[in-house]
Length: 343
Image (cartoon, rainbow, N blue to C red; front, side):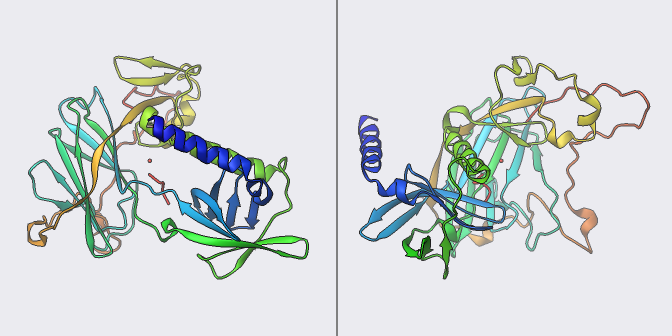
């Protein structure tokens, strides 16, 4: 830990001593582009995309190193209402090419071939709790696997697949001046991005800094875990001043839970009044293992398709359907169960 701390400290000191970080900091581009920050971090952004990493200087070039997410991640919690059964939420698996194996059972696809017409959240329930889960993904014609030993108390799991992206490859760039404007050209794209004239007090730049702060905060996920409501909508860490922890139900309950009852009845997915904390389950990642195609089950965890056969598609049944009455009926208190981004 001391060596890691010393390395991080020296890197920080080096950045503080190099004035180029302050000189180049800013937003390059418009609707898409890249933001450079004074602390040596960057954010590559575009439509529904925000990918972070670090950058360093090498002579006249800038080297960029994207933050790489773990291929698979599992978060778990103890849910009193699930009992000895198990409930699992899957995030990021829609593109296919993934397998899951519970204990000594056959590996099976998470989604069927050519799956489409998706309707999240995807929640799978079993009558028993798995002691071990092996997840596999076919990446560049090579199987990558991760093995997880599930703690006995965890009967409610959030399983995340961070599909590798082309944007996770290292790249380089160079900043040149065109008149009074600085232009950043990066090897990932065949065009340059002009630096914006916005200053530190600009609304857009402040919003970008807030996004960065949230991302930096999310790196403490190993310590704090993630927070979901019953329908697996991810929320920031529960504010201790706004919530009380109910030990019996193992969830954080808003002190104003009775407020906006009618509103959340029609917006159950966005209900943040009951949140449960899920802690990261450490696993063995990138285990190289040959997958016997003949041993893979033909039945997937989820089936979904458009057109013919769509009546057999998975449908989430967690939302409560209320009768339309003049007087609101009290919402039944139930349990409150992401990835990486998604990308």
